[in-house]
Image (cartoon, rainbow, N blue to C red; front, top):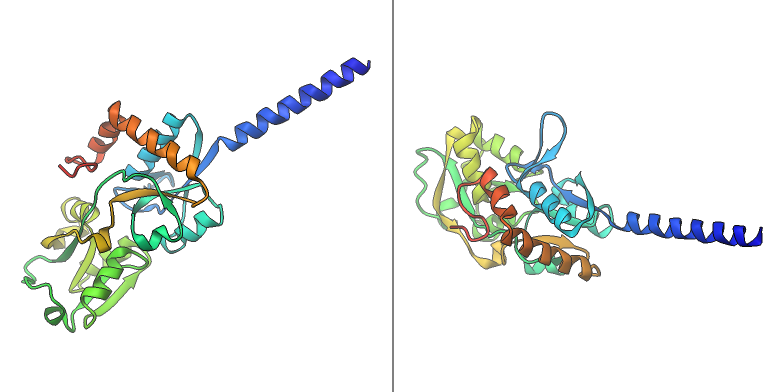
Amino acid sequence: MRKQIIALVLACAAALSISSADAAEKLKIGTEGAYPPFNFIDTAGKIGGFDVDIGLALCAKMQVECEVVAQDWDGIIPGLIAKKYDMIIASMFITPERKKEVSFSDPYYLAAMTHVAKKGAGITEFTNEAMKGKVIGAQSGTTQADFIAATYPDAEIKLYPTQDETNLDMANGRLDMQVGDMLPMLNWVTKSEDGKCCELIGTPITDPKFVGEGVGIAVRQADNDLREKLNKALADIRADGTYKTINDKYFTIDLYTMK
């Protein structure tokens, strides 16, 4: 009887250990869900997009189960630090300021920003003097917002909780210009009905002070093991063609090289 009890205790302990290990392998991905085609919530309420597909491919390569959760942009880093999720995959630029709060994986794509204006607006000069008194918009809490504040301090700056809201005011004529990430803006002006009002203007904005080292996956600073696993998984999906398959689903150029 005593041997049976000991065996039962050991079996329970083993089961508990396995259960705990399984729980530890379940990770949460935080994304915004309001930044198409990179991340969005479809009509069925499902989160999708390039960021999400890349994140799930990385999880599959790491052989871990992952859940994707939506989080407003302004609270996305605090949510990570508060352990609401384990990583942020939301087209986040790797910048020195953000590195003070989180750690980043290797870049999973390169990025640039762009100016957007109504077609025929005739804006050709991008100086503070030329923009004085003009209404310029961007999503709050982004490097685009930082850029317009630093570059056009004498303009009237309007910030919005989401990129969709910025686009809506642009389309409705409430903004003279906006600054956004190049690829989502290109997608908006070429593929959406309300975006037909507008066009990309000027040269791409590639100042490292604002676009950083590219776009990375943010993890908590203590989670170095997870960061290294993500880097290895990223290299693996680049090598085996998974990245290209996901990339080609959304874009006609390779986001990893911008070629």
